[in-house]
Amino acid sequence: MDYRGRFAPSPTGRLHFGSLVAALGSWLCARHAGGRWLLRMEDIDPLREAPGAAAAILAALPAFGFMADEPVLYQSQRLAAYDAAFTRLQEAGAVFPCWCSRSDLAAGDGLHRDGRCVAPPDPGRAPAWRLRVPDVEIAFDDALQGPQRQNLRESAGDFVIRRVEGLYSYQFACVVDDAFQRITEVVRGCDLLDSTPRQVWLQRLLSLPTPRYLHLPLALDASGAKLSKSTQAHPVDPGDPLPALRRALAFLGLPAADDARDVAALLAQAREHFDPARLPHCSGRSVA
Image (cartoon, rainbow, N blue to C red; front, side):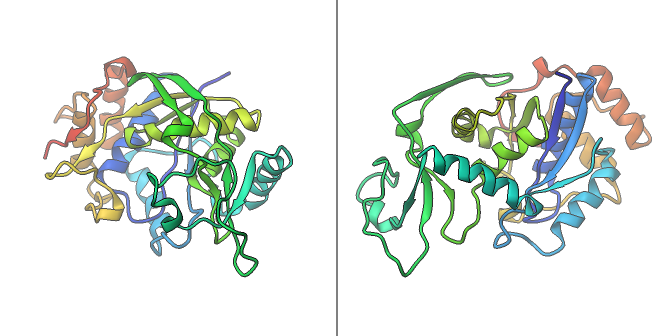
């Protein structure tokens, strides 16, 4: 199958340096493979969205040279697809309603491993829906971080795929949409490495293909925390894209010559030197 990659930001704030690194890494991998690069707006959780953030992200990306090869997919418009996949899991007996609160789970390690709700049903409130997770080990080879293994029951337990509010989880929607967009390789930050086994298991249950995975190093702040919109990371400036783009290239171990006068020239040079096998493995602070 021809290469198909994607960048899938959440509209919780404007495009910041950490997200720019993820966009750049995924774009370079797609172009290196001679494939297509897609955009997905993960606007499935309106409670976390920042007003205007989705439009701002989509407006900023072309300034940094990133143009999607297909129309943007919005998760907010995909409810029917999620409902259909959820029904398949219900019919297979793979999910169960759960009224357990955080305090119900606090006696253990906060995870649910019973395969059924241990709290009495409450007809006065809607349940969350959890996936029944058996004692199974998920193994996969990450293209950058190497072989990975996780006992899903011990690490994730019976995890939620539809919340009390009726909103579908990131894990579930991501799996359904990666299959719909025919993604062959997921390139994203290594903060999501721990999510991959859950997504692989959902892919198996739904008889969906499993893409390759490549988890990029994270850009960290001065305290060693991940740069994120939720911690008010400063947005990059699409009106002056070259400085941030040069920093992102340097963060990924690529030369960014000062003689490149525009974004197109800078990215053309980056494509000439890019090799996914030479990407850095470890997260760290960006070069100011």
